[in-house]
Image 1 (tube, one colour):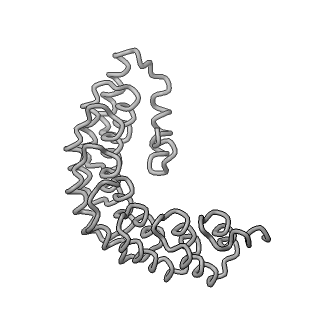
Image 2 (cartoon, rainbow, N blue to C red):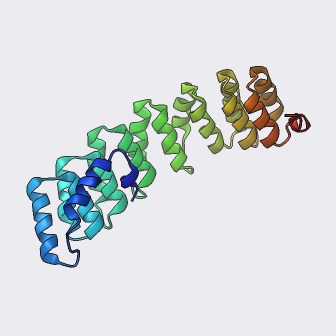
Image 3 (cartoon, rainbow, N blue to C red):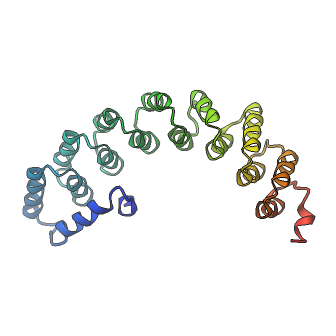
Length: 234
């Protein structure tokens, strides 16, 4: 499970391991007793881990997460537990106003309400999350999100947009923004990864910046580079 390596869940997971290490998963009595203890303590984290590991009366554990309005465990429950109530768990996350988990829900939960989530992300005006939504939903209409990402002028986000765009006009605009940023890594990636990019123009830009390491990579990895033969002298 991803949560073992996620800083958001690591401490809770360690706590869960200590609680369940002596539980016999084949004993309904032991499972019932542990679940009742979790219910008594109203423990959101342990409710999720119990449902994930034992798959026993998961609706009881889901009720704790919904009752406590916990966005990160609402997301995990929707992602990893069979027959989870996606609609209600999404409502928990949206009501939390936690843009991180709202975005995760839209990216990773197949039955999420993408139109509603997109509207929230549009209004957040946070290119990081707009970029993520586009990255994981490549067939989604992204015209509104595109404008916000372009206005951010951040090479990382606008390069991702270039990978998704089929418009030459958009590619030229993104190319201009990346050259203006003077970020040699993304100038090289633009030439290397984007078919409609102007390789000669991007090559001139990276030479002007003078980043030797990126110039070497450009010469080595970019098809059509004028510096191919020059690269042999490095």
